[in-house]
Image 1 (cartoon, rainbow, N blue to C red):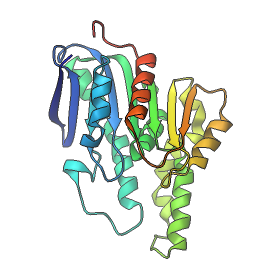
Image 2: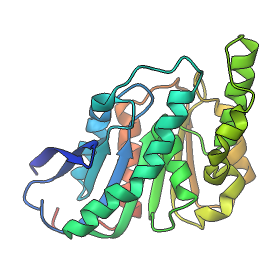
Image 3: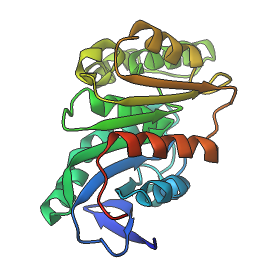
Length: 250
């Protein structure tokens, strides 16, 4: 199979679209896959290729403040980080709507991402029942707890944070999957996390999974730091292959 890798813009959102070049205009399942903090869409291109080879149309967006949309980081801890996630949440439906209007999607929608992109993925599950399956790699479904962690560590380190920090980030409450697990509604959800992750605590993810043993969560942990290897990308590809209906004759 030869893949077409198309560099496009949806509004002001730079994306890479990866698809079988013989089926560019055919309806097929759509996977939106998000990169991590301070990286870009090109850093998840290998994952995108692996997925597209299995019969999916894969879209890799640049998050706000990243890649072609790169901006200077705010000196206020986590302001740029949370702004980037919130922008992903805002733009998800816009991206899906674009491909639906072209007539090149089916009723199968997958979402995934690494680190910040994984947190985006978990947040989207709370508000988008149309998502068929999702994969959170090195991210966290517990955004409220992560907000609290930043508040604690920034304060302990003497960094400036506004007194109304939690109120300014009040939108997180509506996108915290941990406190709204019912929104998962038995949809397949893959979580992969390294036990030695130095950026997003493994304990947050372990606690989340242990609290919800009956939900349709596939949890894989390995003795890794905050790093995605090729074998992990293969696990993600296998997960979506098993849980999304693919285009035929791949």
